[in-house]
Image (cartoon, rainbow, N blue to C red):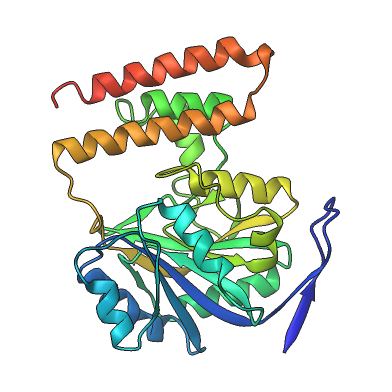
Length: 299
């Protein structure tokens, strides 16, 4: 059965037609034992048939190949590490028109009972939902995965002070911790997010300029600007088991911090363009660079 969804309010794009099929795109980079655990959890998360694609950014541990050889997923070899968003884009582009829903996920996610079905049920309640995100547990804590957009004040305050002053007012506002109810959000964590394919197409997916971090913030912002909603559905639960793709030694942590600040600058600079905002961009770049140097001084 096929369904047709109107283009978002204010959009001049043509109507796009997709089926009700469900695909799961997993971006892998030497995922190890987390990948088979994730694949096992799919049968817990939904009773529906699922087309699984592994968008592999150059794994060397053989885990994606083993899953494909066992018939558990299709393997899309990217051939190099393009980053999370670019790999997901390639995988979604290869799906046929029977697929109208795509879960993009890290491999170190374990889906909770009926979590995918619960997200799809919420989509029926929110016909303007372009993305839907579950409640994410990490180490027995609830991760703040449904946040406001980082406006100039919130974004700069959180980027500069979040690590050294966790209770600052900008971070508290931005993270929306403790607001555990079904609601709209500025953006949803890209570690596990269900996407309406019409909405995905309307904004051309992830921006591939973001190699690491902020690709999900940017996507949520562009979906909102295109007239779609980002909907947090805490009744659907998953567990994020941690960073299997990278070791957290000092050089890796320093690189990740630099990438985070580089992406934060790109996000804000894209939204404050032109000569008028040049002093702001220069100050922001300087402040973020100083923040990285301070945070990595021991390394």
